[in-house]
Image 1 (cartoon, rainbow, N blue to C red):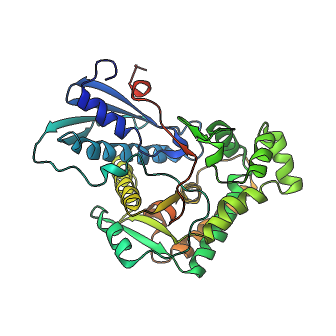
Image 2 (cartoon, one colour):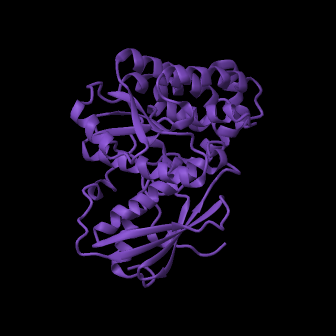
Length: 361
């Protein structure tokens, strides 16, 4: 136990902390109000992270955490009731989680995948998913949500080129540079609160160059402007993996997501989908930056000091609609690629339960 936590509550939190979050930020803390009562503090990073438009990325992550709590609770013979406190600001949401003992509750079959679910940023097998695999993945989606598949070689190539173009924005604006500089743990195979270098997805030579170049924005800007310093990372992180996978997918809500509750609910759907994929032996890599950048464009928001980026994002927004075809871009809340292959040797781990306990403002 940790700090006097009941054994069952510690075990639930020890599983739930493995929920996914953008760049392994883990934007949550746990406040224990009783043996069966937890207050989840959800924070967002919109002030200093360009990828967290209006806190939506953090809200998706908090939704994934809440769903993981629900699943983890079943391993301790409990079901959950979750209620958001509506009088709290979007930047610091509060969720009461009540654990109710119920001997009739079966262990959720996805519980065994909570810790084994990983991100695979490298190329995967191009073997298509079976109709049965896709049916099982679709079956875990809550009502009002659907998955759009982009699988054939022509569609994968289209997506790869789209992601390759998007990556030029991602790697050439100073606002994204500040995020990348903060979230990579260089020389590491594992990291409890960042992305370890060996899990980034580039080869060792490119990683060494990136580490050297990213010591300052001035250096990054020089190499991007005069020596195409962004080209190798874009090829290795976007173009090749975009082609070499079973396919891409978009998780879509029936309408435009707007409220905190919309994004939290979408995060819960995302997590069940991802855990089901892990149960089926599939690997996933999120492809969220084009979703975020084009949302900035459609909402007419300033997000970078680099003027040329806006023309690039305007073009990307039109390409996004063409890539998705029947799907509404406003309803898409998660974009990713999927496939099979070796389990990554390097990965982000998590902060301990002790480190995640809430200690006040």
